[in-house]
Length: 351
Image (cartoon, rainbow, N blue to C red; front, side, top):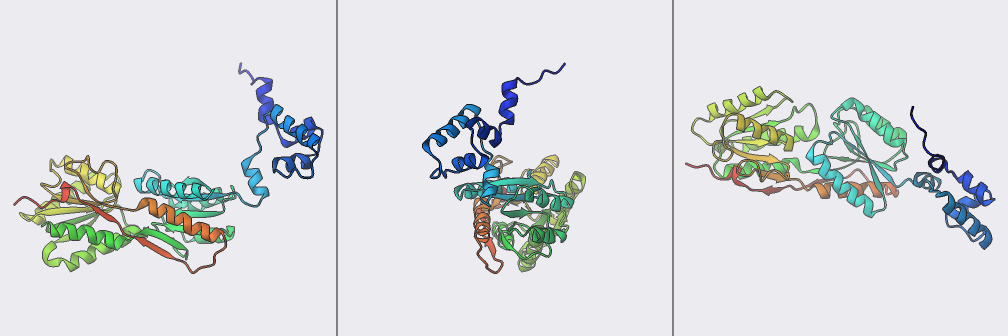
């Protein structure tokens, strides 16, 4: 038979402002004035009684209830497409730090890459009276913009544009990041390229990076030779292995290289290279977008384009707080420059 909690524990869980008022022999309004430090209209004797009742009952006022009484929750809602993506975690750290310094807390809703949950996430966070949203969604559901409009809360988009929505947008400069990677590989003597990305499926950064690669390939046509884009479906390792073997066949004796669209794709490419018995930087050159804690540990060390994730999170919070404070400005686009971190995977190939 399950035992019930001791009476003292049950009482502590049930303590309300009504209990404090009853024990102190005053009204709820008097207790409220005391808790909100408005004691000028309370006599010292009454204030002492309320203080004693609060201490005896171990009463803790709800921060949410107090905030809502003041009309401010000081909460920011953050919707992310996939919390297992290292980019999302890094941006969250930057956003949390900036929010904390401004006296706000961040509430997170993870979509798990399920686009149909975008409206659910906004509705859930809105129920906690968040003052605004930072959105890193899949960006394919046009009804999300209407849902945001219905709640009347400001929003800032991070990394991914949202169909049908004009809002502040903070992101890596995807075109420049791809250009840096291609220029670096071409400059080091790699000449046959494969760009590996997750299925593009209308996701804006994937679209922009794939388009930037095609443009760079056209600009460096004399140096790059054949250059293809391969969309690596989740779990289809055999297709990725075959794409790399096809790259080897096309390249012949020319140095071949892979550019990966993000950290998750980088990991899949590294696994595929290992399955084929190749060595990064020797059998195939490599650059991946997104710096990770393990990039220096894979193979001879992976060259990456580091995203300024802290700055992305910080600037997104800054833009949102300006909107929360009532600034009425045209939608802004903030594109930040990535940083090339060169390691052995992109070193000039041995002749």
